[in-house]
Image (cartoon, rainbow, N blue to C red):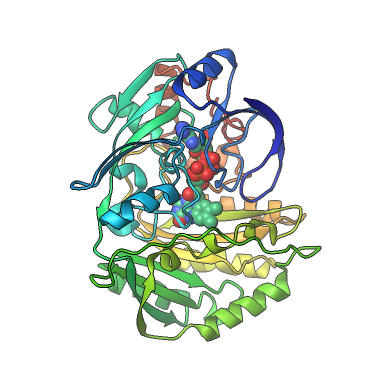
Length: 435
Ligand SMILES: Cc1cc2nc3c(=O)[nH]c(=O)nc-3n(C[C@H](O)[C@H](O)[C@H](O)COP(=O)(O)OP(=O)(O)OC[C@H]3O[C@@H](n4cnc5c(N)ncnc54)[C@H](O)[C@@H]3O)c2cc1C
């Protein structure tokens, strides 16, 4: 089944007319792959920019079968179009949770591998790709290969974080993590500044999960005041998971998120958070607060928004983070949703985003000044030895990408070796010079 339709990333910025192919089995994938000059796989379209967009899109969400689940070992094999939400519905009641999870369940396994997604436990567990036992990949030649850390390992390390540019992930086997309860013991601590927040990350380095909401609209000494939430899986409370469908809120004419509403929301959030409290919260509340609302990405109005996520190396990170935040506030940017996390060591995946340091994600409503501001931020991040997350990127320039992802040439060689060059391309890959 095929359809031409307007497609954009989750930020709704730069919609593009795409011819969408929706095969529901491998032979369908193969036939289309050999038929088309070039295409890109697309899962749930939760990447914010144009990484899952091209003239021709191979929609994977119709290949969403569970293949095997061992309740004793927590080893799960699924088709790549299965979502994390669908996995949780099946595995949590048997005491198995995702080893690494992004902030939404509306993500496919293929998308999670292709972006090598990270969660609130990167400092302990690394990325999603580090828990993939093996996967089956459809190459540009039409051949299907199995790849893992030990089998065709060059292809494996290019595919985890490879943004769909090495082939189509068909199935994946993942090692899940054991849990005893669906509750999270959440320890909330308020930090009066960015420096205090980073100190708290350091002193709580053994916490299983850590994340900070950061007020990026306050200035001066209060710049970066934060609410940190450390989490541990509880031992008590049992395994109960009620996943409800998200609600769709009415959208008012014009953007709901403007400078006044954002400032008010930031102040309200800071005041509401209770310092030094420990309480048990449901796992869904701790990990996926945004999943309660289906259409929150429309609150920024018609031109859409960009989520800008960058990482800065730990060594000089805090001072540099302050410089970037200052630049943002001085230039009228900033968002309600600003999230700070710590990253542990980088892995061997060639285009994987995390490097040891601090990462900040903020939303920017699209306006005439946004593009110039983000290009300036790109330059600052690159000069500081950091990089921008490809799953969120919508406008990075080719030279910035090549400077900040130094393994891109090795990546291109592996793509050539396995018949992916010229076959798997997205609007993003063309913009970044990966062809
Ligand atoms: C609310 C929200 C919270 C988020 N939180 C986090 C977070 O905490 N951490 C994090 O790391 N990310 C986070 N993300 C980003 C998200 O996890 C990634 O963008 C993820 O890749 C989206 O998966 P998807 O199925 O929607 O893939 P898409 O957006 O459809 O595609 C993303 C990339 O994966 C490729 N791809 C998809 N399926 C396949 C396949 N079968 N084979 C080969 N390539 C494929 C596409 O070509 C594209 O390059 C968040 C996104 C949202 C909207």
